[in-house]
Length: 493
Figure 1 (cartoon, rainbow, N blue to C red):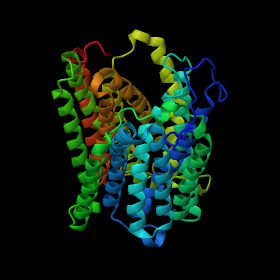
Figure 2 (cartoon, rainbow, N blue to C red; figure 1 turned 180 degrees about the vertical axis):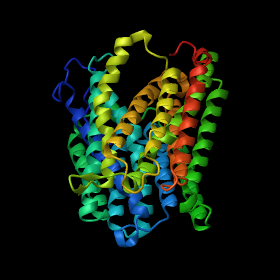
Figure 3 (cartoon, rainbow, N blue to C red; figure 1 turned 90 degrees about the vertical axis):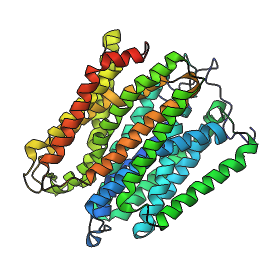
Figure 4 (tube, rainbow, N blue to C red; figure 1 turned 120 degrees about the vertical axis):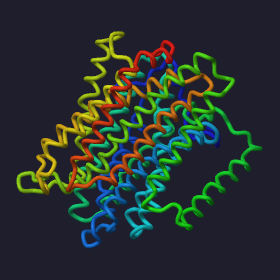
């Protein structure tokens, strides 16, 4: 084992099939574990973040204006997905996916520790920056590392990814339950501390299992020439300096953070599309497919701008409008965030079976995207029968039903989106096209934060009606345009 490569030289394509983890390679257990605990800490922290920001100081919060608090949460979520681009670049050019995953887990843990131990806004600022960068790096590399465990023709590959996806949702389910319980009994910082502990557990078990990973997990696919290191270091220092100056001069503030992230993501997306579409390495068919991806990108942004309000508007709704009484005991606000992962675990297999059964007769990707956005808009309209009902008047069962519809919409778009992106990507820009899909999630999440600042619990009808109808309209437009979009996609469905 060389100093450059801390992982063992296990070859996933060798004749000896490792089946020690539910029929899968033993190394999957380690990546499964670190991703599960990362999702535990991520969703556990996010479940209590908004209320920590806008709860009064006497209630253990920071007393931030509610609209500003939701904008910060949205900006943070957008920054996580924006950071996947940085994580992917470092993995591809400098360190390899495995090392970036390991270092990202350490950065995430440090971020949660900062939230738990540093007082006030210092803790929020340092903590959210570290968690956003770390989560982006881990998200960008974990899937890649899982892929190195299998040869291209290994029949266990899909089942392995399904098991990995289960780990994600187990963490997303348990995180809000336990951090919310600690937040209500001991205080917010104990909840943040539990998120740090969860990430530490994931990091420890992953550290012991790194030796089981194949060499491919730590290879650098496209190494950056060493003579370009000074230039990259200079760009990085200049970028950080610009951000610091903008913060110190008041250009970047808490109340406009979501807008800043939105502008940054739009600029990055335009740049990506421009580079790909104007490249001489892209053939005519590939260029047509990229144009075909554009309406899918726009629809994806619309979808995520509603879906990601689970962590902004729905948090406020759960706090102020939802009846959380369970047999005389008041359920923590964050527990609502554990409902969606349950439905994902149950319905993922159902959707996979449906698409398998339909085969070539299943709806095309534009139709699935259009239906997803229509269903998401309908979910927002489902809030209307409970509008104006007063504090804590909405039945818990109603939110369970609405989140069921959220999940149906997600499963129509999210797994389909990553799949079609890889199919539409030009050979020379495979990674960049995947980054574009993540940018649509980033932009939608940041917009979710900005839109949430307009939400008024005392006058909900205009908010839910307007956003619900806009989403439905966007979905209908894509359905009507499905055939022209498919022509642009040149044989990809």
